Image (cartoon, rainbow, N blue to C red; front, side):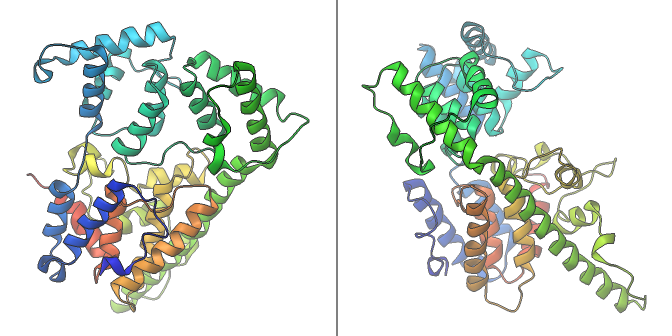
Amino acid sequence: MIYDVDFESTIRDFDYTKRAIRGMHRIVNSEEFQDMDSEAIFKYLYRGMEIVSFKDYLKRYLYERAGIREKFSEIDDSIYREIINDAFDENGAPHSFNPTTKKWTAIMKGWLGASCVKRQTVFLLGFGLRMQVEDVSDFLVKVIKEEDFNFYDKDEVIFWYCYKNQMDYLQAQNYRDIYDRKLPLNVIKNYEASNFKNLWDERDSEKIKEEKLLYYLSWLKASGIYDNNKKKAFDSFDSMMWKAKTVITEIYNRDAEEIGKKKQWSPDKIMPGDVEKMICSGIPMNENGNLQTMSASLLKKQFQQYRMSRQRIDGIIKGKLSVERFDLITLNFFLFSQHEEVSGEERCREYIKNTNAILKGCGMLEIYPVNPYETYILICLLSECPLAIYSDIWELSYQEE
């Protein structure tokens, strides 16, 4: 079944990508899956996937880097906090990229207790712990299961350069200031972001390295790619949100007609709360009427904060939050989940093709089944009732183990 879907032409060829696809193959060809057994899928996501929690990976990284001789299992978190604190002080790194009232001790405790974190946290730790660029990549790709450095993003270009050359956060800020105030330069060369890493020669002098960086950033700024990608992402989100509202309108009007009420819904009357209710129906609500916290889910390691809450939708619409891959992947899943007239294989194949085109057009990584949430999406699409399975899994994740 799943091998009929052409992953090879659309997904990066890493060993752990192949392992993820093999795992999906096992579950979708099992008898339980043929019977639409949500529990079998939940068990695979919960226990069958290769998941490394952020906290465990971070502690192991700190343990090995500090050369601690005691047994790993006997090291108290206070030791790791001391290592982090000393490193951040020594390297002059901020405790947060954004203003915060949270105490430094609480921030460190949060990292050491987190199943997963945002990529900005990885970049912050990269400066605070003076990581090698390869270490930062490992945290991004292998631990939080996201794309490697995005060389269409000016900040990630600058961060990569600083990690590569063991520069501190102050220098990164200096390059960001140069980008904002002094670029582009008069001489603009043409580049391909995919070849960014090939620009560098270890034999280059520091002056030549910096010159290459500034030329690349000049091209990036002059091309408008970064801003255009952000606009394309928002436009794609806005377009899919309207389509989702149209689908929900049809569902509401159909339900109203069945109970004898007149059709009264239109897409402009559909609010973020309606979209949340439709997509997140399997997630229980708390006493305040909000989605139950992610920390209460058994799949918190696997799904991170990937939930289409009304607060998130509203934040994106008002420009307070940026559109992320997850937003586009989830909204398009909802739209394709309504394609009930086709087979699961065809629906999944078309979803991958369509979603990859959208993501690529926004300068984002294409579908990546190493990420458990994206595996979950694809498995749901292969089933006969994608949205029902999606909701069932969320619901099961909030039940006691």
